[in-house]
Image (cartoon, rainbow, N blue to C red):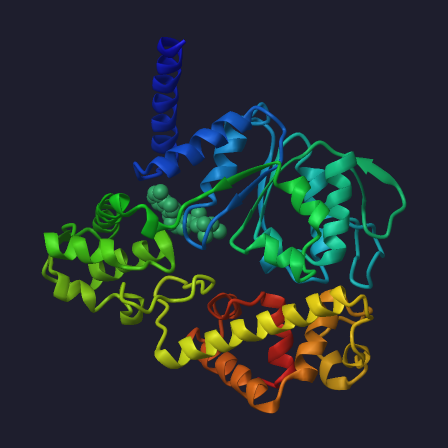
Length: 406
Ligand SMILES: Nc1ncnc2c1ncn2[C@@H]1O[C@H](COP(=O)(O)OP(=O)(O)O)[C@@H](O)[C@H]1O
Ligand SMILES: [Mg+2]
């Protein structure tokens, strides 16, 4: 009945409002509201939820909402950034290990799947999980069973898993970096968080909120934007989304002595080539806050993306013709490639990258080397920021640094 559904809608609106207040979520955009509504609806179930969206859109609120509105809310909650844990230790972090499982495993250790029993695990940047870990994850999701590293005893656990990624998972699947069966298992429900440029109405609200927060923090009057400055913010591309907006608000708050901010002043804080002109930055480029990208770097980025496409195309062609992949792939044993890779047999991903390195003409390798060197310099050697800026995984970056001797 329409009356009943209206009532239902009102209730939902109130509930969504309450969630925003509780978690400090700013915005009135209907897609943001819808995302919160879905989180509330699925919270009571044990369905796996995958939160997707660009970097900096606010994905991390969602696993918390889900946990806090679930029956597990009194159980443990852990957030793990899969992209930041080295490949060699991630299985042990997640599933634990027995004493002596590794040379430096002096004592036994419980993994997150064990200590989060009865609660929720948030696996952030899940697209970065190594393939061997993906297999273990699939198993624990399907059966609730896992084995500590170095043990043969099967243990049971009850963990609700929420994951997030800013990768295009379908592309990750196509390129063999992510298991399709795991993807379907993780994304029983997908919550898409919209980018800031698609919720322009929220930009002034968010900026005001951050300006007030920083005026509190630094004990100074809050900065205020005039109309033109507000319009400028709304027409900006916001590659780094809300994280970047917050960053800009903080820098303007700290640096400007005149607290009435004009468009002219504001413009100095916004990297120019992200202005909404004909040329927009490539969507896969993840800016981290105050990233500044000049034309040359854009060009590098285009080259990177072209390389990725070519590799994928080659793979597809190889698959289609049902031929084993060409001999260049077998060419693994060269020391140059082995250096950065683990001592185990190379994973599929490594095979693929080996192929890239061997097939590329020198000039592209040089360009890549140069791009990595420059990005490392820009981010003062911070590998996470560098990897993000270049649109590659941290582990890949790590290997390339070694390969190129950077
Ligand atoms: N709607 C929002 N209201 C207030 N702050 C937000 C909102 N969305 C994101 N933020 C802030 O922006 C920053 C980035 O959010 P985060 O969840 O870490 O992004 P993601 O995980 O998607 O990269 C955090 O400081 C977060 O508090
Ligand atoms: Mg995040």
